[in-house]
Image 1 (cartoon, rainbow, N blue to C red):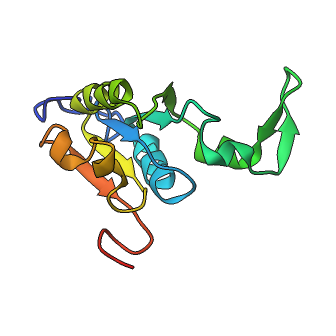
Image 2 (cartoon, rainbow, N blue to C red):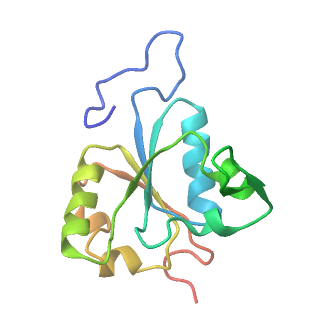
Length: 144
């Protein structure tokens, strides 16, 4: 749908074809949610921090990739089926890039501590109001 709710999935295609999802989460919750949407045909774009990427890349067990580098099996599962981009959300230029990506998308999946995206000026009030937000945090948006 990527900007237009009038775009329909192709006949006989995956039910979420044409939908773009921004995965700005880490560890399990939001990436798992985005992965399920991707398995149903959505295009998923994973946003990673330029300083080391997603936390899951560093969790074993590891296998040796054909290029000789270690590759996390956790990442193979949680990071599958995504396009990727590195954006520093702590910097104004990164925040603007994120808002542009979000404006060309339909769903944002995130699982940061409540208030983190707002502190970075990329929360729901800073982005396109038509976006659907899947905010997955351990204790909700106003818990302990």
